Length: 154
Length: 79
Image 1 (tube, one colour):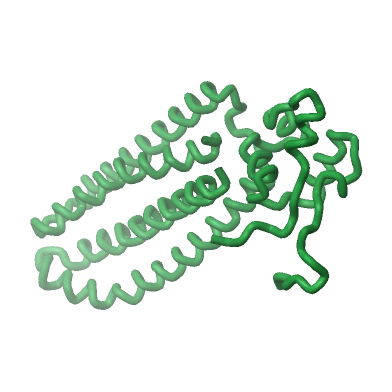
Image 2: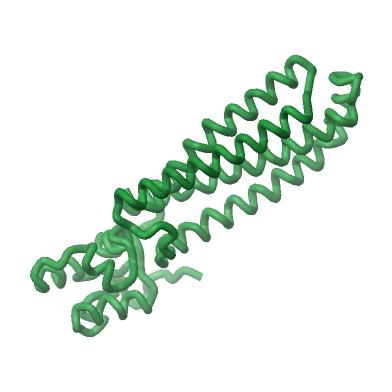
């Protein structure tokens, strides 16, 4: 398995675990009809930190084990795979962001009934998290595309 | 899955003739990863013209001795 493929696996697994926990916590808040913006922001920052530390640490260990230079430039095949994955994920991200924008009106109506105490604040939290969700989703898909390409080449 | 490119190569043979040069050795000399060299050798990836010249240069042969075009003159071309 190439170093880049290991990077992609680390990114997928780390993202699924860390951000899976984040969105699970958010979904619990939605189900209980109680969204604490401050707590969610703190959790978001913690998840960002954990993701950063885990990915850096795992990639450093993988580079050390493979006796490869950390941050070595990509070769032409890796660049081609990355360009393909990026093209797909950027296209999808744009499409999903339009979906989020289109869903805002419906979400605003829903927030007035689901969160009568603070519909505006809840709407802001939900829209922000919808944007985070589609960003995380497309990033995971980008890494999965990397893995699929590298598996096909193996 | 995309069909393999209509290009064959003799990289395995040329490596064998150079005292069993490893894929890693070749990769290091042309600035690629071993996995990319393996993909080229197994005809799963067509290298750029520059990479093809670099590979030929490592073996000290003309590029046509490394890579051969397999498709006929009427082969369908991609846009």
